[in-house]
Length: 426
Length: 159
Image: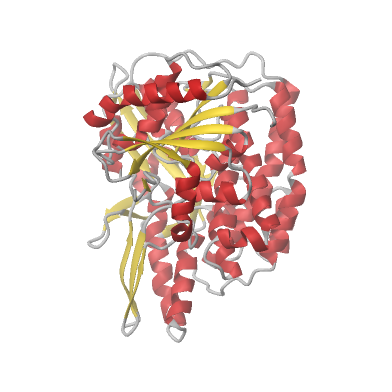
């Protein structure tokens, strides 16, 4: 018999999976991605470098900050512009805000229903209102970071080539710091909630890839590394990562010479455990997860550990900004002309590459973008194939649930394009 | 009756998907018109659940968005939020997949965070990868702006 999972819910986009139970195999695994490189290039070709990041910011509603920052950094590299230390700190803070926004949404809205055995967080509005209120309070705090630094909760407007066009107010930063400290009890309650969940047991080792920043838990860096010994410059990403098409999917997959790989919270966590904040490491221990885990369902735990880590890092970053003051930070003068630039950031779902060439008039000639979900697709599929034999004795319902949970653990972002409202007028 | 403090006009949608971006374009156009400074104009982009916060923080709002209500492209529909909540509640309760406008409105209502809200919806022609609005939607835009300004004129003055 065949089981079809159409429109797998609680992921950002559409996915379609066909399982042939009798043969014990995955027949079709289709995950639709909108941000295809071809569309990306067509959208940007011929644009002036100053227009590129604002357009790119609209590619995605969930990770608009990551796209914006990767885009700005690639353009800066092409033009030979280097932002100063304060701008780099503000960009870090902005990334923390976005990753927290995205992680909290995934944890509470997408994952909590799985582990509480309900279909939607809506069902908790009456029975566990405090849980929903807490989720939204935490999300609001993350939104506030993006608002104070980026000028608004999504699609930032203050970021520019060379730095920031508008600096945050000191009073807003101080207030933001208070809000972050005040979020700690809600985080504790979240850890308690997730520590009580029963995570499926499944182990499969893969290659874990993330940026490499010796001083920090990785966020913005020039090199990337893996658990299998990869250590390369971001500018060489095309030598290390090959994108390819399969016959049955419209999306591009990615692999290294060694095969499929994972990017995202679990990869970052595993490769950088000692660089986590002390509080985040404590949370990891409470969630019974360490750097040796090879269970993809544990991506959820890694996500929560990261939220705690980023709250702590945000507080320290604000302290550093307040200590040194925000005066005198102006975007560097941007030269005219063109060049070639490649940059990568750790987006909520993992490694994100942007690479551009500009002609001598500063107009975009080529653009390439490799998104985290595209890099995870082959790994999701390999996981599904590996777990299926373990689930064949389960009921259809349970088998479906486990496979969906596995896909959701990667938090795939497949389409951030449109959410068109439909109304039947009667 | 308590005084109304914060009023917002929020345009939502994706600028890269043709007519889906009309809400955001309308906000940019409104910035060029004479809108009372007490009314905040917000480019809501495709922020999903983030819209909940934007709504929760105000007392009165208008949302501008593209919607399929089965009319000619460019048709404009003024629609009270309550009507969407009542009509879509049963169908969306099951899942929160792709947090769309209806889901956010239902969530806001259930949490008691829904402001006095009216929607201005425009029937799109093209929802595909494009940075341009279609001709019928472009032509509808001035009418939409006039309707919005007339709506604002009917709002009671803020303190």
